[in-house]
Image (tube, rainbow, N blue to C red; front, side):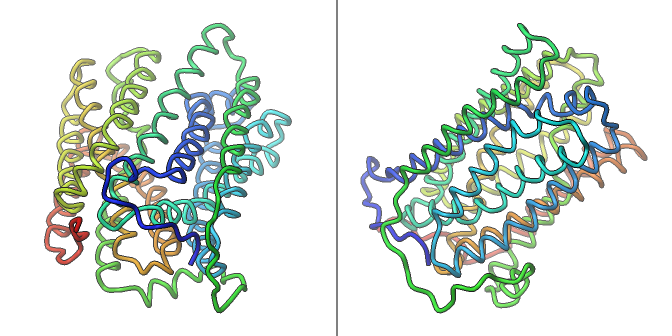
Length: 405
């Protein structure tokens, strides 16, 4: 097992420890860099001559690399009993990948740089979340993961805002923006140097796991882990990219600036609510808050099926921010609470890896449904499937974290 910190006292002042603060700042700076480029990535690739098909293939392969590498490096972190090296390497690769994309415009180079970014995410995810789990008490996991999610999502507010501000004064200067993104990336790397692993746990093996070693973990994992992950992945298969929500807004004739503004607004709501949602989840129960979040998601997608007003879109995206706050970090807290402490990185890595692969299929499924039946039917089907997932998870017993004391 990796980093083991002292148990967190019940006083609120000590729930968010130094390690949690630093990891949250690292994630925030990294997300500033990533989200700064998110709105302009397709525009940049088109500007240098890439087709829509190539962009789709590039993103698909990059996300597949992230999905497969998360459980692999999570298992490796558990095997070595170390977290910090994976965190530092993962964030380091993501930081340097941004400016690399602006150096050359050859397809193979772009593929290499983009894949390097996603590989970095795969390397760090399980180990970082295991550090967060180690730094929290059983009764404060949702609070800790919610706080981290809030800080991380603040980066998704600042990043696009910086991009809009820069491009307003320097239109079409996309390559320079990729160079600028190195600055928050470097700040993230500097912050990782401040993290200290207090204790190294000796394990029986130092060998690297097999590429698909997480399959063996799935076989040996507890029935309640399997049942929870099955429900979460079933939802992920229909939880398509937010691009489709933005596309729906765009179809109503709303300007590009307004679309990006709505996206920033959503992330702001997400960032403001994630931490409070985690606190409430620890008090009322992770399962209750998570299922409430899914129910709100179903309402949002049903609303998108018939919405045509910017004001209503803003309301729906505010609710969408609540859904994200009530599920994103909390799902990881849920996973970490039922996994053995020695397998935390593997358990979270397996879940997030499968979630990434499901997200790829989800966007494809959504695209086919949209092309065949239109956006209205697509959103309604997603809402209906979500309600079925809620019914499935509502039957899942004995998964709550024990209350404090």
